[in-house]
Amino acid sequence: MRIGEGPYVSVYCRGSNAQPHAKFRIGSFVPSDQPGPLRWVNSHSGYAEHGKERYFRVVPGISQWLVGNVWLNEHERRDQRDNDAFRERWVLGCPTCGLSKPYAEPAVLSSAISALALLRSEDQILEVPLRAFLDHVDRCRDTPEQI
Ligand SMILES: [Zn+2]
Image (cartoon, rainbow, N blue to C red; front, top):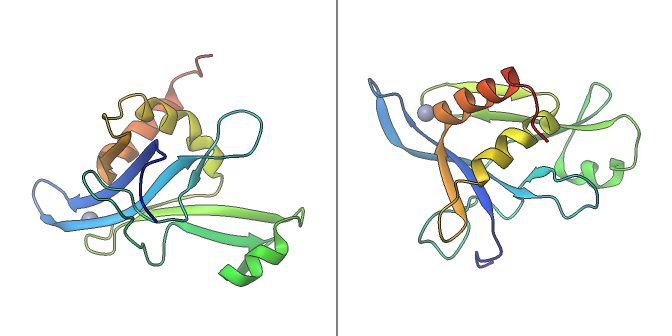
């Protein structure tokens, strides 16, 4: 699939200043196509990157799915979407340096991601290092929502 319908906010990791490592692509967020307030979802197409026409496949990806406390695989997820106990959580992590942060309620990240999306470049893809993303999310959650 070609990139071109943006916007995207992509999160990657290159390690810390003290211990840099090769680029690890964590995932991309895209606006949900569901009606209602703007909500950002994990791009199932993969990682969007500047200057690249195709997505990078991200394995295993940031999304995990549960019904209650039972983990679902990708196939089971499709059957359980309408279950009231269905939920998705995100784990933003890098296996290379071990930095990892789970979010049980991805919706809480939407306003932080929206703020980042406003900074997007001409091709509407914004790539953010994981450490900067987590700092930004913390700052946004400490600040009252602005409408
Ligand atoms: Zn890393």
